[in-house]
Image (cartoon, rainbow, N blue to C red; front, side):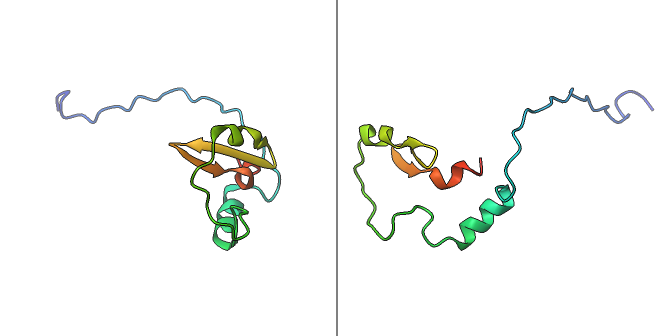
Length: 86
């Protein structure tokens, strides 16, 4: 056998330790997926129609952990239900 027919050795990268914050019990990924499956009104709109024009100044007012909004690609999202799971 010559060098071209030998299996190539894999190069291993040193592993980085990730700094993680432990989640509270009941707030893991599985719990979030269960909530998504079972929730009827996760966006907490209570049947109100979707507003199509929300100015950025109003989004800035919703900056609390219990009332968080954000803009992604021009659309406004209520991320408050998700924050405890992140």
